[in-house]
Length: 391
Image 1: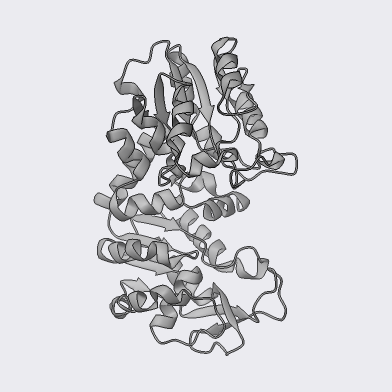
Image 2: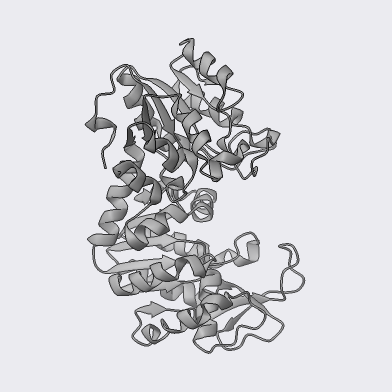
């Protein structure tokens, strides 16, 4: 996979795919600028080569329609402040007006409108990809977090013009490859969140690689159910229940550690408690209760494992963090990560956002910009958009 440092870019017009899909406030301004800052080294390098930049991203899920709150104006203005140079925000991402405005060469940085306002983006429409490709001589992928998506701007464009990786993508690939292929030991993998269906292969792989695998969130609910524990009204993923059961024998040798206590309540109503929450041992969950967090004894046990590790990889909250009562387990993991001498690697949108809220991001050695992309890459070392660059 070639990067921007492997080719001649002098005075080229470069089409750069970034991922500035940050949460927005009511005015459309990004609530976080971590992903924007992460791509600055790539943009500054390209500008240093005399390049004219045409940037493209998606924001939110507008489903092929123009939705005002998902315009890229806010992220373009945030980039302008960070880059300390003018950024021309365009009203669309394709079309003659876009081409002519860029062709006037009145600026060094242009920012296209939300790619997902066009249904051709997610459909990976060849015609839409061709219109995008006409905006640059070289294509640069610096959108690691979106590199598991087979979309027009990710895999369609590099079929049409030469494509290379940006510095952020190069950095992500190098770090996550070292974690997957040559981890320090003792190596602890912490997995939370939901969607075990998309994580089961990763879990099976890391049970073989890691010295310890600690689980929480809805992932743990399904594994507890598979192990024969009563989980009451907890949400589980029945589709992978039988596959999850094959991992249960790993629990007996302490390789895979399940919660020993949990925080439960009556099922939430639109993320609001409808009754008291309580901590109980696994196996004492009543039929009308649902599990929403790991308990304090589990958090303490997990903390001991983390403190004895040389490397800790974490993805996914350990509880339903949208409700204050169910943040204890995730806060406990963050505290353990801040106090461990181990190298720490963290990824996942919700996880990173919660790190920010806790003021702990600066205490983590490597924070990945990817969620699903990080998990997919760790599972098999492949991402469809990176393969497109190699071809």
